[in-house]
Structure formats: C-alpha cells, structure tokens
Image (cartoon, rainbow, N blue to C red; front, side, top):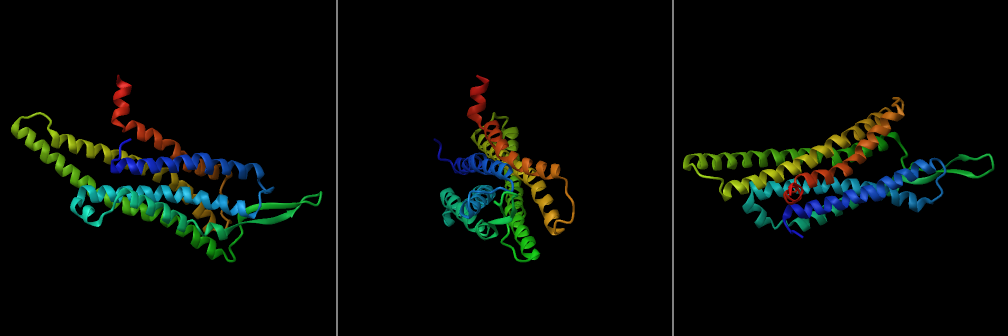
Length: 268
C-alpha cells in the first residue's frame, strides 16, 4: 500500500522473481523433459528463450535503477527533482531495455533437426543454431555478460559507495550533536537509521544477485570461449544454473528480514 520510491522498485523486483519462478524455471524443466524431442514448434522455442532473458535482464536493470535512484535521492537530492526521474519512469525504462536487449534471442534460438529416430520420425531440438560463426556466439554471450552483470555491477558499486559515504557522514554528525547535547535519539537520527536500513537491504539484494549469477556466467563463458573443447562436468553446469535460480528464492527472505513492520509483528 505504500507508494515510497523504494517500495515501487521492490514490487517490480518481486514481479520479476515471480516470473522467474513461474515461467523460467518451469520452461527449464520442460527443456530437460523434452531433451532432443522438442515438439512445440519454432515460434514457442523462440518465445520461451526470449522471455527467459527478459526476466533476467529486467531484474538486473531494476536493481541498477534502484541504485541510481538511491544515489540521486541521498547524494544529489536537488538534482533528482530537476531531472524528474520518477521511479515509475525508471521502471518503465528498465522493462523496455530488457525487451530490447533480449531481442537477439529471437534470431539465435530456433527449432532444428538433429537426426532421425529408428521409426522415421525427425529428432527435433530447440537450440542456439542461429549463429553462422563461432565469434558470433562468443561476442553475444560476452555482450550479455556485460549488460547483465559487469556494467550493472560497476554502476551499482559507484552509487552505493557514494551513498554509504554520505550516510556515514550524516550519521556521525547526528551522533556528535547528540553527545554534545547529551540528548536522546532525535528525528535526524531516525532518518539516518531509516536510510541506513534501506541501504543495507538494497546492498543485500545486490550482493546476493552477484554471488548467485557470477558462477553461471563464468562457467558458460569458459565453455563458449573454449569452443566447447574445455570439458566442464555436468554437475558443475547444474550447480551454476541452480545457484542462479536460487537468487529469486532468496530475495523474498531479504525483503521480509528488512521490513520493519514484519519484524515488529513477529516480535509481538
């Protein structure tokens, strides 16, 4: 019910997490079940992989937008008003960028014939067969790693290093005033505390995202850049993929832990 700036980002992150759990993980199970017997057609093949990348890209773009919003709100409060960067506009931009950056999936993945069964039926597979050269495969996955993981991490780090510096300075100033006046916690201290709690929650969400998704990109980058010659155990692929999806399961725990009202109700 709250319309605070942070809550708007959190709501959209929750939508992204639910999409990952309800669609991306479900379709991944579908690929495992069908294996080399894909029978859902070329259109469904392209649509499924396109939506999968949208869910991933939207999450990282929303996290980046939230970091920029916190940076402007705390470090550049006057500038955020002049730029008119409302959370809703930043959310719309995040989803739009996800739709655009995921579009190569529509050309890369397609249904292809991988052989013939003994009974004469075609053995079909939904796979990344849209490449004509190895360098295209390498460049695209490297590009995806850059816009989903590396660039957002750089932007997020810059924003939160500056935010932490400002909040730390404000907290010290308030603390010194309280010590000097021998007074109890005032509204200024409460405001700094609320900012600090918001920063802790945001940083926790972002750190979990980086920790969960880094193994996935590292494993696949090594595999692709070696042109599939470097043998990676199947269990390592399984662990990397599972850890990546675990991110969407951990986010709600973080939201609940840092929600003040939730914790008060629990203590009562």
